[in-house]
Image 1 (spheres, rainbow, N blue to C red):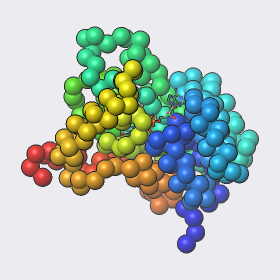
Image 2 (tube, rainbow, N blue to C red):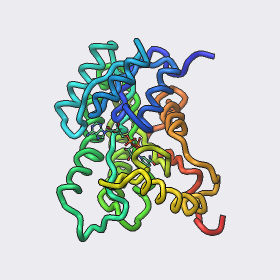
Image 3 (cartoon, protein in one colour):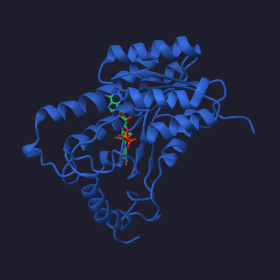
Length: 265
Ligand code: NAD
C-alpha cells in the first residue's frame, strides 16, 4: 500500500517530546519530510539526527511570530515546500493553582504559547500554502477546552479559544484550499500530563499519579491509557488526503471520557 504522506512536507511544533514527537515519527513512517520545531534544542537536535534525512530540527519559540516565519521559510528551503502544519507546542499550568492566587504573568505566558503560537502558526503557514496548492493545518487543543474544572483556568479557557479559532479560520482559509482541523486529546501519558508542578520530586509525582489514575479511568469508558501514538494517528488522518473533505472538525481522542455521563456508562 502506498504511504499516506509520500512527498509531503510537515512542520510539527513542540516536536521534540510527547505527542509532537510521536507524530514526527508517525509522519516519517508514512513518507513525509518533517521539520521538528521546539524550544528544546538538545532533544530536538537529537531526534532529527536519529531520524536521518527525512527530518530537520529548527529551534523555535512559537510565541514569537518572527521565529515562526523563519521556521516556515526554513521548511520551504530545506524540503522545497510546506503541505502540513501541526501547531502542537503547548505548556501547562499547575493543576491545583487557584485563579485568585495566580500570577497574571503566568497566565500571559500560556496565552502567548498556547493561543498566539497557534494563531501565528496558522497565519504564516497559510501565507505560503495559499499560493502553493493549499495544505492541511492541525491545531492541538484539549478536552480541557470543554470542561470547566478546578484549577488550570488559563489552560482551559485558552484551549477553548483554540477550538473556536480553528473553526473560524477553517471558514476563512477554505477558499485557498487550506483545511484546518483540531485534535482534543484527553489524558495521554507524557511529561506534560505528569503534573509538572515546579519543585515536585519524582516520588511525589508518582504518588499523585497513583492516586489520580483510578479516578481518571473510572470516568473513561474504554478503560485504556491514551498513548501519544493515538494522537499521532488522528493527526495522520487529518494531514492526509483521507480527510480531503473535512475542515473545521474537532477530533476528540479521550477514550470516550467526554462523550456522555461520566457516572452511568
Ligand atoms: P510535552 O510537554 O511532552 O511536549 C510539549 C513540547 O512543546 C516540548 O517539547 C516543549 O519543549 C515544547 N514547547 C514548549 N513551549 C514551546 C514554545 N514556546 N515553542 C516551541 N516549543 C515549545 O507535552 P504534550 O503532552 O506532548 O503536549 C503537546 C500538546 O498536546 C500541547 O498543546 C498540550 O496542551 C496538548 N494536550 C496534551 C494532553 C496530554 O494529556 N498530554 C492532553 C490534552 C492536550
